[in-house]
Length: 195
Image 1 (cartoon, rainbow, N blue to C red):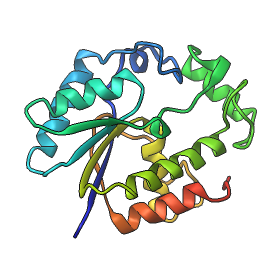
Image 2: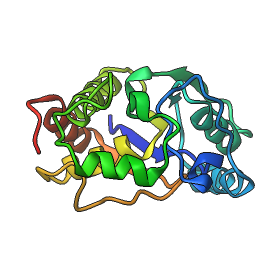
Image 3: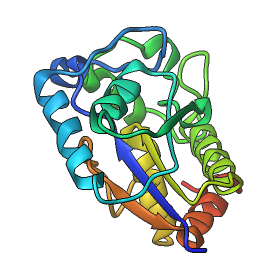
Image 4: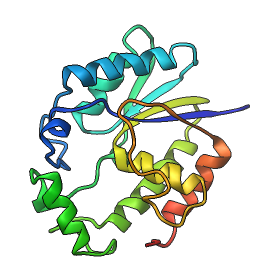
């Protein structure tokens, strides 16, 4: 049986527009009107693909995107916290510029203030992909965040750099993976951190 995995970043959120970082799923961050339109377009792109399951994160913007995209379909939903956005700890609510300045001053193994590091997040995303592969469903769509999609794309291509060659991940755009390539990405991310 050929399996299909679709990873997509959520639609544009209000914090994307205000350029504020959010790594806390308890903070309510709705989609913008543009984000809702992006979610509808994602639904059009997935319309002719049979789907057995939709996985979202604990962040409301991923569920909102998925519900809009799949509103005319009967697809079971499940929540997988391993796909959550990076927990940035005390940087939650900071500007994107402050977040990037912090990243420039630190290395990937350095934890964000009081929480996980980028390397720890990459390993978590590897476990998330492993959990996806262990599921019995044949066609799964995951609506998640920019970083897990970026890391999966780069790892599936064999990159040793989680952030390249693909860096900017478009909102609500489907990225398709077969089982073999997703397994390669899972292994690369779940094993020893790479800089």
